[in-house]
Amino acid sequence: MFGGAILKQLIAISALFLVTSNGLKAQETRFTVDQLTGKTPLDLVGNDYRSTMHRETAIAFETMKKAALADGIELKVVSAFRSFERQKEIYGRKYLKYTAEGLSPEQAVTKIIEYSTIPGTSRHHWGTELDLIDGLPKAPNSVLEAEHFYGQGVFCPMREWMERHAHEYGFIEVYTNHPDRTGFNHEPWHYSYAPIAIPYLRAYNLLELTSVLKNLALPGGAVLTKSFLNRYKAGHMQDINPKLL
Image 1: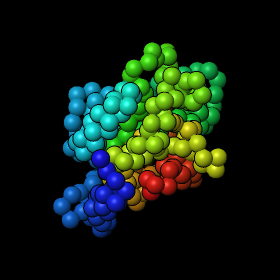
Image 2: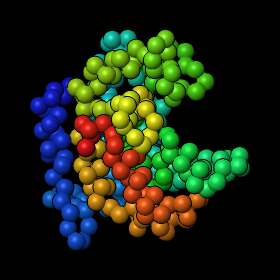
Image 3: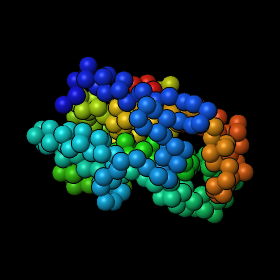
Image 4: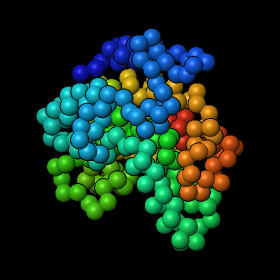
């Protein structure tokens, strides 16, 4: 279990990342652009999209899962690590659907980023992000809907447990329901392993998105101008729970 002091120490250790003209690196660890964008991820364990995550995330999650189970909550991962190619597939499928329904390219991309990320920009690329539900109650057809996590929703007890205890294990809710937050819609199921995710985000913030995405031939690529991506980065990637900055 991580107390507040230990969590701060872990974050401080993980944050020893420096930037040089030769790229992103640390004293003993190097982040490449491909690692930050999900093309060649670091130190993963697991064998599918539900179980694959950064090794340290997995260790902390197993500890938290045991504690939750003792309180009658079965933490179940719906989605964990997501590669660049997998995110590109999700993005492309939604883009085709929305444009087929009559939306313009800009409208389609804007609708996609209510909940989904532009490929190469997802926090799920890092192996630090978990979408969670409670595996004990009967699940609704579409589990990742905010209504299921509040009031009489089947996952409300899990949300309440996570709000009380997740930080003790290093996990922080990313997209809160704070009224002034912009970017992605509220996701009460999405938690991030802070000791690893914070240095990843700090390294990612130093990238120039236009350069990273320019050669990827994404659907709706003409919409992804420098000004659009600057707004996206400020709102969707940086306007998150301040505990993760």
